Length: 305
Image (cartoon, rainbow, N blue to C red; front, side, top):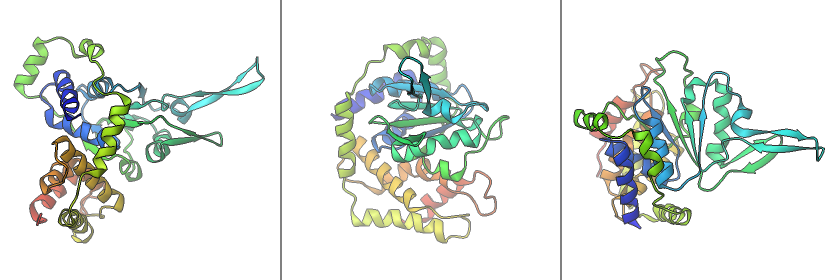
């Protein structure tokens, strides 16, 4: 089964050139049953990565383009009167897909952004008083442009916390961009990506991830990292229990991708920036984006043993 995971990584890396660490983190997030936020400038490959993951994992894919006039009903669906039956018939929205791309999520108003909260946390949505389950598996990959760009609404901390990981793709290396310019258009290659995993195989892999062993010493390391954010003066606020659970789940998935059945401190360190960077703020600038510097402080100052 691990060979299939390697095949998934290889297939996506053929589409998104020079971004092997980010692709590995994205697959780690999905194996850990999390949701992924990709923050970067337009044109960096955020949408391409989402399409490629959906194709190789064999998942039903829907894209929601977030705009300032998007309404919650455009995401969740609505009931329409059927004159033949004389009844209101529910028409599900694009949220009822296995992999949902919430494109440019911070261009929508907070009211529309919040329509994703219950879906991401509970795997269900409540519409017109009725609770409707979402497909299994259910993944949300949201993309957002930097908040400094015009026409954006910053995601509140309550919604950021629903994302297991946040990634940034960044500019490609010179060699990768040259290969991109000389090669075939990525969007033309996407339809030729075959599914590597079936739904049953993906469910089996996800069920194996929580079985990856984390020793008491490893859990103590995670607790030291979390405790530092709650006691050191430079942190505006500490990490929540949800964040500590997310960190351990992501470390387990990272170890599983490395074909190990136990977690080591290097696994925690590998996923730490993506898992906690968007959950942290500096006390001196709580409205800013100081998470990266705080993560580096944690990696440097908190002992692993």
